[in-house]
Amino acid sequence: MTRLLVGPFNRVEGDLEVTLDIADGRVTSARVNAPMYRGFEQILRGKNPHDALVYVPRICGICSVSQSVASARALADLGGLEMPPNGQHATNVILATENLADHLTHFYLFFMPDFTRPVYASRAWHAEAERRFAPQTGEQTRAAIAARQRWFTLLGTLAGKWPHTQSIEPGGSTRPIEAAERVRLLSRVREFRAFLERHLFAAPLEQVSSIASEAELWAWHAQDPWRGDFRLFLSMVEDAALERLGPGPGRYLSYGAYPQPDGGFELGGGVWHAQRAVLSRLDVAAIREDATHAWLADSAAPRHPLDGLTLPDADKPDAYTWNKAPRLAGEVVETGAIARQLASAQPLVRDAVARHGGTVYTRVLARLIELARVVPMMERWLQQLQSGESYCVPSPHFTEGVGVGLSEAARGSLGHWIVASRGQIANYQIVAPTTWNFSPRDAAGTPGALEQALEGAPVQEGELTPVAVQHIVRSFDPCMVCTVH
Image (cartoon, rainbow, N blue to C red; front, side, top):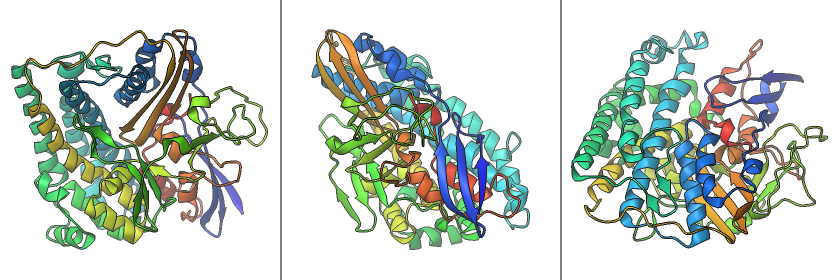
């Protein structure tokens, strides 16, 4: 057996290292290390609860809106606030803008450039991949960067700036939208739709999101296998066996995405059990964080976030990461777009996961389907804004109590838990999507989702950064700076 340390990874947010044990050309065991401690949960203690909205967006430079939304929901829960419909729709548009930008960035800038590597030079599609996706020079890479830049101008109108947006409040959005502004916003959303329909899918969004099975998907692909970047990706899936690479734990967590004024979510929540093809209700009280293998002080038993500790212990024996190990009722779960699509009964993703499990192929597929589904939702939310109606209700002075804020970031389920006492934050705990997916082993020795997915990955002799390992890691789209606080 040999041991290989891979990292730091490029094209991920933050620092990441992976230690691999390899035998007979396969990974037999993996340990995932988040090597950077940040301390936000300690910084927040003693602050005014409302100040969390200033601090938490600065956890991350690429998903700051997601942190703001989760924090605002925790404060709303603490204060018993309910935002008006305009505020709900505006907040959803702000969050969706960031989430879809992350999906676009992941596909064009983080994931697809790996297929331009020399290891794939003999493949029929390699030259086309280089033309489209080569870093800096790829035709589609450059087009996606331009589309992303124009897409983010939505947030100039909706939220003043990005990142570290400050318009999101517990009671809604502080930036009302005038009728003329709504027309301009709709125009920008439709411009993004045009980019997706021309470049990524080479088909109308509604046609893509209505594909109901893998048989239908591959029949559509066969009509013109390289037309559009999505179909070229599917050609790579077939040729590189991405449908067999990186199987996850088979349990998928979603808190529910984009809540609506009349209740419910646009993309429903719950826990999808792939082996039984059953969606179960989420019990948030069953979440526990295990710090056995984290460089953090732990207790006799894993803790619920409301009772969580974040106390550094850099010399702790048997620890190998700053990341805690969250578990749901003691089980490892995976989160992300794949979980949202499974929980919301998207038929193609459910069919693909039933056939292949959570793999490199199905994780990327779910993100692309989510792009096709959410853009029309954004158009509808903007059209539902009511002129002259309130966007935000005032926040009270938060003094005593607890609050829970659950949201869906691009990478998956994000939770904020706050305990307030005498007008100050007594405890604040954050469990981010990458905390779930990149967790270490727990007290029972059970590996986290990525650690499980890496087991069995092929490693060619002499590879120092195995391409299969890169594909698996990137299929989860890690955001390490959101992971460790």
